[in-house]
Length: 178
DNA sequence: ACTGGGTAAACAG
DNA sequence: CTGTTTACCCAGT
Image (tube, rainbow, N blue to C red; front, side):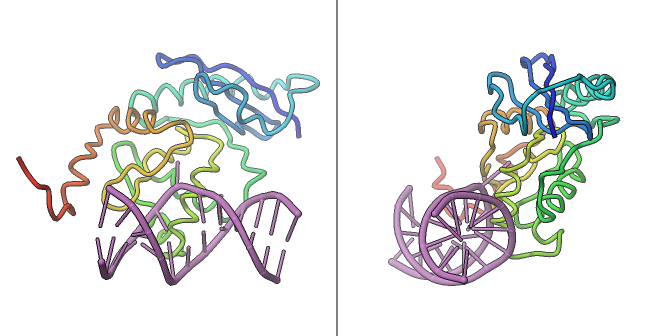
């Protein structure tokens, strides 16, 4: 399945989106060159992706502003495993400004011991922002990782009004205060 | 702060 | 199939 790319203009720079005949298959952060193209751009540019491009641009800008996209283009997860689909579907249920932990996602998909595997699935998410893996934190309010770079994760959460310190405050036994 | 055991899944060989 | 790696988690030191 070949794919076509287009640029997505935002106040934070130009993202790159990859479309297949089935839908949006990948989204790259500004500066991250064709890190994600599932396959090569080749042949005719399908008319289908025209509207998808607009939807993607709107949705990306909504998320960057800390809001929930009104509508998404179809997402092409055709390369993914069943486990990854389960995780990514679960991620899409997290609303802006809310966070969940890797362990909670694992429990939600019926595999409470698979927190680490959930982390791996998040790392393999080809469509960050629209599949909001940035709202998944490690236990104790720790940031965990982010494929696009941790500064992006922090920025996105901040835009949504998440205060990391308040999530961490709970379980520090010895703050060794001033 | 650092280490190690437990754990599930993807991947290379 | 086994071994290696991973955006984890918890309990010890």
